[in-house]
Amino acid sequence: MRKIAVLFGCLLIVGCAGHPHAPSPAAHDLAAPTTSLGMQAASLASTLVGAPYRFGGITPEGFDCSGLVYYVFKQLGVPVPRTAQEQRGRARPVSKDMLQPGDLLFFYTPKDHVGIYLGGEEFVHAPTTGRLVTRARMNSPFFILGFEGAGRFP
Image (cartoon, rainbow, N blue to C red):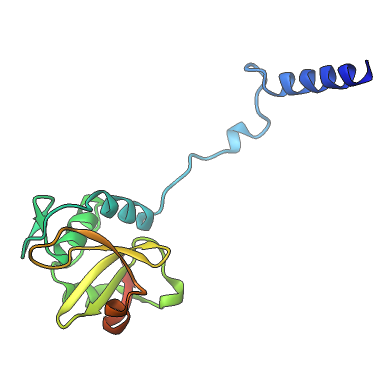
């Protein structure tokens, strides 16, 4: 009988707390969650995985590496330069241990190359002719050897 009384008491407390007409004490203090520009860029870049590579491409019909970056940031209202070399020159440098989603990763493989960091050592990039926009791992030997630095916009 005692268990039933305790259970009933708990149900009453839970029921009161969840009553639809009872205002939450801090409801007016809660701000709508915001997503950082970097998270938005990483999320948008992820949706473009599978788009074809096209030299000079800046649309989902085809991207080159810097065209992918250009397109993603343009969609988010952030102007970035068009080429990987210019993007590297204008981005605010970020150390490898301070990377955040949306940061740009720069490689020399043996030409300038750029991708958008997703987090967890992964990034999205448009590799080369005949390939699709894809996810890659920073810790693969090819990218470890070619890593030139990272940067952030704006």
